[in-house]
Image: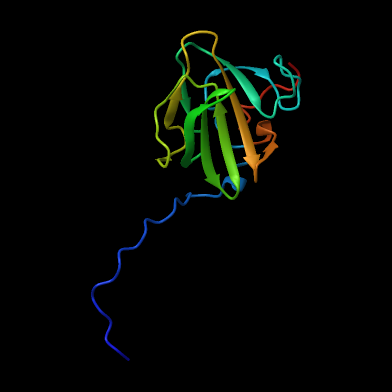
Length: 154
């Protein structure tokens, strides 16, 4: 066998890898923001259509945190909804956070669960949380922990 050269090409950075699979986190996610739920998955939206996620009324300038570890796939304005932050959490899943006032992270950045990722605007703020599997919306209430889950009776 030929001797191996001690010089090897530089490797590409390893892709982001979660400590645990997102699919295993069902029922364990923390709410991304403190606030009351004012819109539920499948319910009619005031602006038309149906909610594909959960809407939280938030305090002015509230901090938004990552509900699960992942990589920031998108952090920009997306018309017509405004500022959109998308976390790639692996396994074909993405967490979408819509309505933030400003970003505290950049695209490509890895974040941990609970890490601040955005801040809300100063007045009349609401945050929409959506979870998508291969682009299709899934009910985020099933993923939120008991403490963060919307009360179905209200």
